[in-house]
Length: 477
Image 1: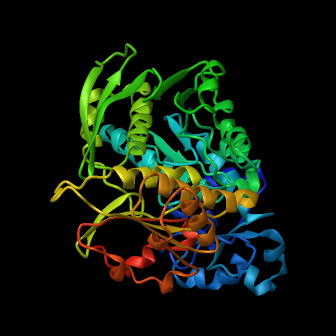
Image 2: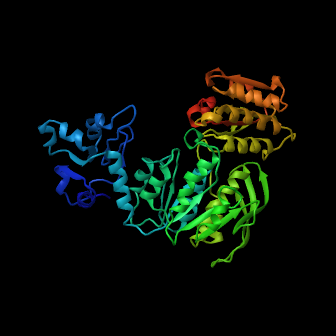
Image 3: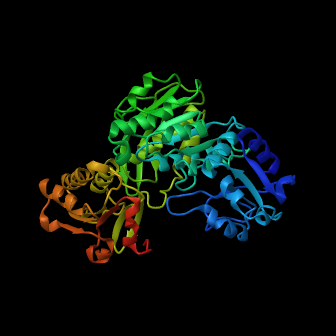
């Protein structure tokens, strides 16, 4: 809970001032901060951010009407208000030069009061699932803080961090980057003690230019660790393996390469993956090998589980705790859900997409075998939406996605979006029949039910901006 005395102390150190009736209250005034009046809860402190399209200061009155206990506002805006408004004793204000910088400053200041492990997770793919798996393991020993939703950027991360409480045993925070300089800022705020980069792929190339640029930006997470910090390194990723020689404290994982934690004897059985989790490094509390049944689909999910298990073991958790958590994991909405629909099985992976995740999703579709195999023959169908924020390589990347679909012997390909023709061209060049391909500019033109045949295995994937889940029309079974 936040009190005015705590906020005053921060303000004195960081150049903010408080005004209003609640300034001298002793009891807590708020438990959370909000940037959106649509989701604001009574008691929240509203942070009036200024964006490209809207200025949060225009929603100050609405925030108080909805029960906000206070508002963080820009000093120039506050001083421009009528004297009667500024003297209004029923309202409480935190006055700062810039509310975004104020939010970040408060979060960084709040972080300094805690010594619990803070695990920062980034990567081109898998960071949300890895975060959820790791949080599931760690919370077995007590409450933890974790990123909710997609609160992982320069706004979301400080909002998440402000929820850290004395009773929390650890914090697991996603750290999403899309522009140069993003990771430096996030590390300055969060000061992670454990760092994990799941992989390096071709995401956000519109701003980070190429995989090397992605690797350089995300690598700042490892570089920012304190001397006793721990790096969790994916040895199978060529951009990440070199970090093993650059950091003092590290744990490694992989499937193809020998590492501290590895997976063997991998099998897919319906909507689960089974594998041996192998500890190849002596660690107090046991080790060796154990069989895992992971209620997620795809080899990439095993990497996510390995990353989370490695971080947990590095923090002193035991095999039995890891296994207990892994068997309870379920896919997050739009992230690898397996859905029965109209006699078909749908792999719904529509939260986001980039070339690497598209390739993995198509490989998962190609190898997926339902638990009830029936005749053993299932038509594989892919509905692929545009991959966004790829910059100059966008057309080539979509053409490659079509080639990947053809090489994986997908039976039917439906591409939608601005680059749908490029996807089709790539598929044709790689040997797919033209008759097996359809292209659309808009989702509304697609008749999903008309495309489905009983027994089909269907992948639905595209970037978040495409809203590919709309094909299901709100129906999940």
